[in-house]
Image (cartoon, rainbow, N blue to C red; front, side, top):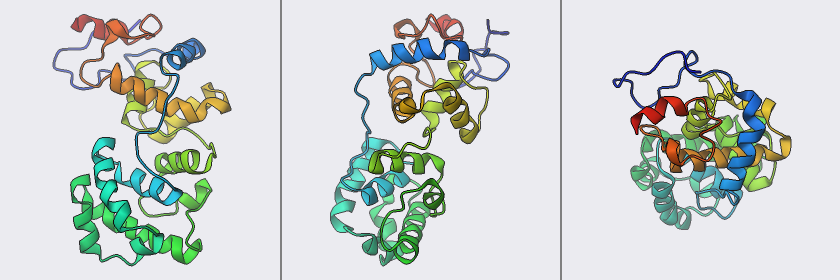
Length: 235
């Protein structure tokens, strides 16, 4: 049971390592229920090749997938090859990415990553974790998504804000660092499930386990979730 009841002043996520007890023993039962609830998880970003997958995923940081799909609808028609990004005028690229948020940083990273791909990887998006995370603006989350969706290579679990929040609330991890959360989830799941864990937790985070007011009364796993007794008090 949780050790304290959160104050109303607590904000988006009440979960902390001393509130939510370890619940890893229930991982398999919860995972079965979540898979049944979300049987057809698919990526939200639109793309047609590895380069587009990489660009869209880099752009998705600190933005919504809906907004990024709007941006890339025009972007992918204008920039069709990695050489197009590598040789792009930086200010023009910034303008093309303006509505994605943090557009200057994203434009700089995308141009630099494209140049590295051209110069070091013969114009092909690399297919290993080590090579991908060497690219500017690419961390493990982005690399995991690109490897799984573009190449069918499952290295780990992509941990975004939804995965972080839901996995902590469910008691699967006490960590806040995405890399450590990824390792905790890897230790719990079967390898063949790693690709779908991230998308499933994202779906659940967006639909039910929302940041400010999770919909615990409608949650398929509320009887197994140690956080539900906290949030049920909001209803």
